[in-house]
Length: 363
Image 1 (cartoon, rainbow, N blue to C red):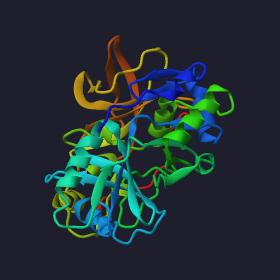
Image 2 (image 1 turned 120 degrees about the horizontal axis):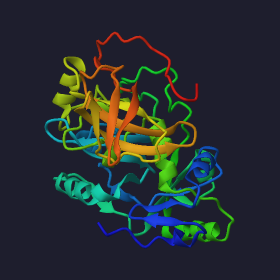
Image 3 (image 1 turned 90 degrees about the vertical axis):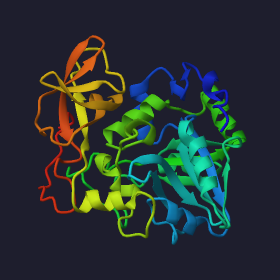
Image 4 (image 1 turned 180 degrees about the horizontal axis):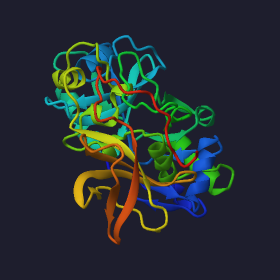
């Protein structure tokens, strides 16, 4: 997998570019609003594109991943997970098929490892996994915003709808991501550079990945290169909702998925943290979450949301009380963190958890 190419969005006025591409263009809060209302596009340089061609591609992907794909129709969006034999998340991919090939949008940092694994799993089947990143880029926004692009495929994020065969653990009603309108378009390099040129000329509004991540965190949306470590089970981050089909055939890690869901509880659970906004400092990803001075979890994603203020996602021990007075360690000391339950402590098919309204600063 090649390194990320030089970013043509460096020429946009006010652009700040880092290892993940365009970070912002000077106003991350405004960029969030522009993205959410369809006025801006977000170039996602941290995404890579893989393809799988061949007549066996969908049944093959069905057999080696967590998602039911064999009967997928062209243009239908979903996502899949690749699990290790113990059910831990190794890879995640956004999936859309165009009738001739299956397009996978993945995190660039993990793309090479996923491609290698797919190529090793071909056996004698008529499938051909390839890296398409050299000729393609990913641009995101609302469905209407990306519809105007010359795209080879468009993936519409299914989150947070519970897909067929899935299971949702989050009890908030409404779910904070229920109004999420998010699509990622796969475009060729010429189209990507055209968008960058229009943005540089002031003819196209763009937003950086800080705005993208803030909207994602506020929607409780997990991402593989943030919420998944070597121990993450899909149950812990509510990923059974969109990425796992509980009634499909056998695949690697399925036994653990079924056992934890039907008989046990995940050892950790994802929470949303409303961080004390009185301080300018934000915790780093990986910062310890503390209860009475003792570590009970780690921060996985951090953002400043245009309405919610400083927020974070964190994985904490399952037994951590839902109303526990948590703090987060930072370089300047501890800051208070009010937790909102995403995955409840007794998550599972038999859990009798009432549907409670979500508490947030918007209310």
